[in-house]
Length: 172
Image (cartoon, rainbow, N blue to C red; front, side, top):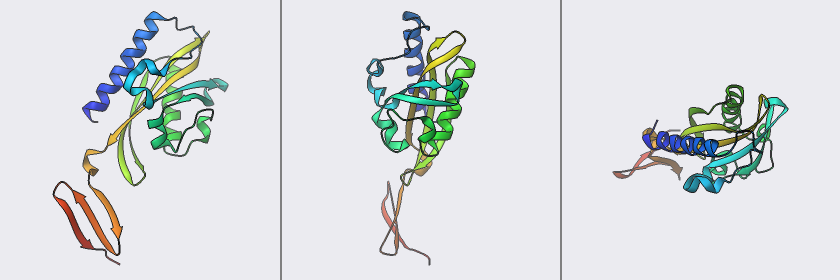
């Protein structure tokens, strides 16, 4: 995984831990995403429904929407498209089961591009023994092995990369 994604995930987890030390874990769980500065657009706040059977997003960052098919504020996780639905659900369930931050790496193919992703879920509130709110982060960058762009135009496959455009006849 790219060092930048790991560093960003670590910074978000450290900020969460700082917030946890200042505020009580037993609080309402609602958080200000603006506290996370430039990463605000990569964050979502979720309420745990039915002991982790589903999650409802109260806040939704714009950058997450790029990979997850739009703004899902007010939507349940079960309504999201794949691959985001399955992988976000797995990370969120693990975070509520362990009462601890969970991070998972993933590679997604979205919008004709290959993305390297870091998915983080951090519990922000609990009631008794159950986690009630989560902070979810989706950090992503173009996969380093697939930085070139491919497209077919008029029967010609064009590959653009650092060396400039290369063309080849598309096989039929």
